[in-house]
Image 1 (tube, rainbow, N blue to C red):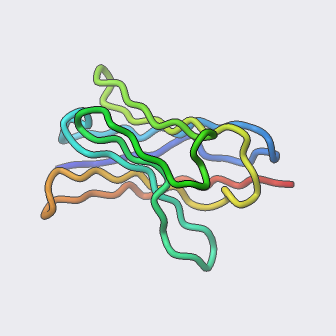
Image 2 (spheres, rainbow, N blue to C red; image 1 turned 30 degrees about the horizontal axis):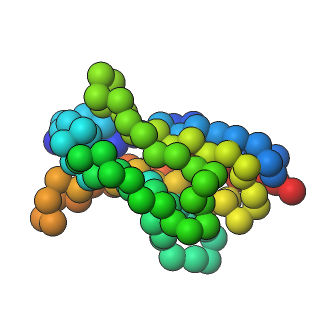
Length: 116
């Protein structure tokens, strides 16, 4: 049974930083595609950053250069380092693991609120 647990969200002022963590169990994150999504109030969930099994990363244009996705095999955790946060980054951030097209898992989300 795959479980993803996010942590690290909170309230931060614009210009500040947060680091989100996604602890995976039931499958090795290193072997799977992992991604962070976010959903702002009244908006659809959108991709923020992803990291493939081979280590290739991709980012939404809105966060490129400010956010960094990474992972550590030792603790089976994926991180999202978020710098220079702005109010548009506010939302619930979700971790996603894709083992194959038929097996996709989501965490329950962690709230990030950026105040001006």
